[in-house]
Length: 305
Image (cartoon, rainbow, N blue to C red; front, side, top):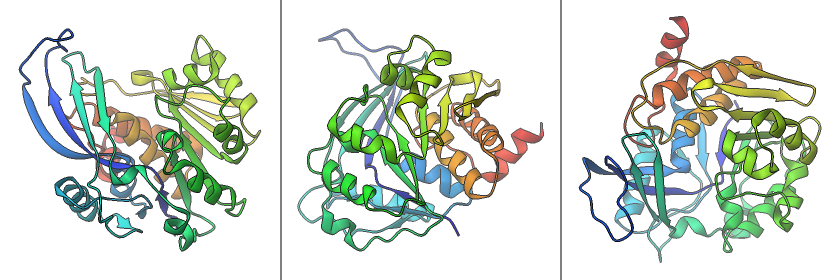
């Protein structure tokens, strides 16, 4: 059976809801605050809740945040390939959600920001596994090169999924030039696709992405409540979204990515998997917090309406 092998970073989110961010030097009271597992955990939880076995290939720290991250992964049934790192705790992200549902993140990485060739030496993916790569990982000096070397040594039929995230904004770095030919699935939101390609809108970004990637790369570009665009060069289609009342957009893209991969692993065509992912993202934005992806039954119920 297929698995999702996630090579990104699980951190802990301090999630706070507020009316609006203060000006520099200002002060506001948050309406709520809680510590939640976040980062790569959100994608893994979404995939796991929709029937796909998941293995976390990143490090996790020794301390209160590492304990919280491990407990969350264990509760979801996510396997951890690496033992606890003894000398650092797991990192923290302050996640601020305004009344408009706009999010602001401030992150500090811990143990999960490092990875060695030895960490990955005993990891042997199966032929039908999906390897999830986060753009954040390519920015980490203590992780990027060993991870990239491992990815490029994988058998060519192993599916590599790339999520650029908001910080990877151009294809020109040495690491990106090496990784681009190995990407089998690209998943991002619209602004990330625009930033990466320099295009002015999604219609222009889709062919621009295809020029940077292998011809058979499957593109998934999310367009907020409008749904997403999915397909390969020459046949990219729009898959309609679902109308809901959004309260928090945090984690919606992660829910989409995890449920989309779970759909593909279950044998669905990309457009069918995208429709399930759109439903999951729609449900996720109706809930507070980062890892709010619904499970299979909830997705089925929305699709049946």
